[in-house]
Image 1 (cartoon, rainbow, N blue to C red):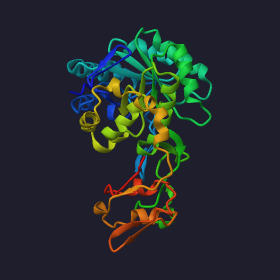
Image 2: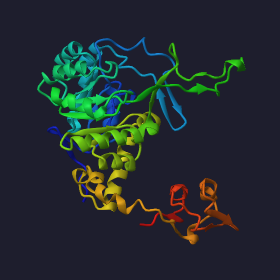
Image 3: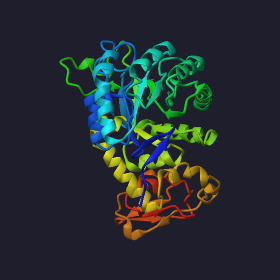
Image 4: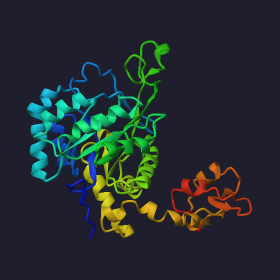
Length: 378
């Protein structure tokens, strides 16, 4: 029987799939929907001392090929709305479900001190967002210390900005008193253009998808999953005893499993909840449980860091040999032939023919085959 409960920094979660700070947890009612949808705990949208609205540009969210683009800021609600209504609702629904409520706050130390003072009767823990502070870790460390004055667990959310060493920042956060790390925030800024919106003047096509003065946004969703995996992997490698909440591109049970395998204690979901609704939390939990049963893992803690445990055996995988080929499974789709840069595989009369003497062992055909006709051999 698979046990999906997890304990992180003294907090007990019914499963390891949480929402990330963002639109799906923008107020108490949406937090209620996430709890009903199966989330194992709650992280609120980031609360600041002033409402983000009317600073948020329009439009500010868009699905793009391979990912998601946003120009979200912090909560568009004033902090007083959270203290007087939204956190009350959040506290009621999380308490009824028996799950923790992590309140996300930002950004500077003096602001966080005031926010924590007013939110503390509702919060079980805090997540500190420092997305807009810059490249000097000192303000971040001061922000962590301000939140730790509450005496409750504090998680620092890392941003993958160029020029910032995530491991160094994580160590600085732990040095300042953080109990864990959330990794990662969205990546950017990036630019996407709109060629599809009907306009009276076709010459205007090609404008940025996002609003705002420069039309840029932050990239999230599937597009940043592999960046997030690498950063979580590095964090666990350097600090295996520090809890990590893995964020970035989680939309399936397999995504969650991969993130936990590289070192996360739990995962956070935002983009998938925007695109698929609050039921996504329960779907990911169900898929994760099935995968764990299939692979013989009995608990999340047993799964956590598994990739690191078998890392020394990776030499078994990386050998230059032709793949195993099962002709009976081949449908003649030609994906392998199209992608092979060595002309080592051809489709003749609806079946692939593998020329082993030409094969370089690159593996692209195996990853492109949709029917299990090709398999790496070890």
